[in-house]
Length: 302
Image (cartoon, rainbow, N blue to C red; front, side, top):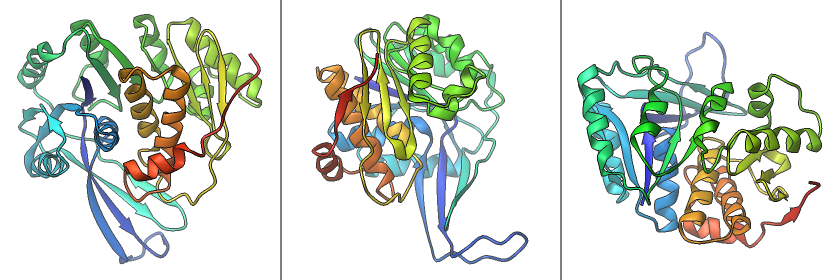
């Protein structure tokens, strides 16, 4: 079973506007609300693939009720720890560009944290835990390390800064930085494909079993200790960048959990990430299947 951890879930309030003008009153053309948070994004994609993931983390207030109800409508399982505070609302403005305003999130009490750790006992050794996203400020900065110490299953870690280096000694099954994040992790400048491979290899050497580096419109690169694979970009219209990286994580762990080879799991990851990028929300199974037929993966210089 795959568990997805979202410590700071949200309602993603998407507003589509003609243009953004500072200091003006702007009326939206349309708006939608989705349950959000990186772990939730992963679970929504896994559900579309036919898996039965379980969401864990913290939920509270009227916003938490909305998130839980929406997940229920999608048939997605959850075992969130209930908290007193209100889960956050993040505003996503869509126009010629994308602007995100992400809320800080609720305060989580010590006893609520204790209850969460009690619930971790349900996770078994042969399960897989997807860890991703920022922590609420009220949680200890080593919270994820404590989670890893409490479970015996394989895990992935998706953190968008150099703190990911602190987790490599625990041997995550996957890390997935983009090109900019990879440069930030090693406090360097990345100019060439050779640079990308070099620093992805460093993540391998430090403990990451598999590394996917997303390159936006230039495709992506997969690196493990044995090979380097590169996926060419798929032509299409970018509709939504929110959740594309989470969808790549979901596709890869789905593949591993269903006995696909690493190469086939990587191809599925590419298809899932692209399907979400070309869709208003998380990519559907039909869109993923259509794009999967177009995914080209080749051995790259290693």
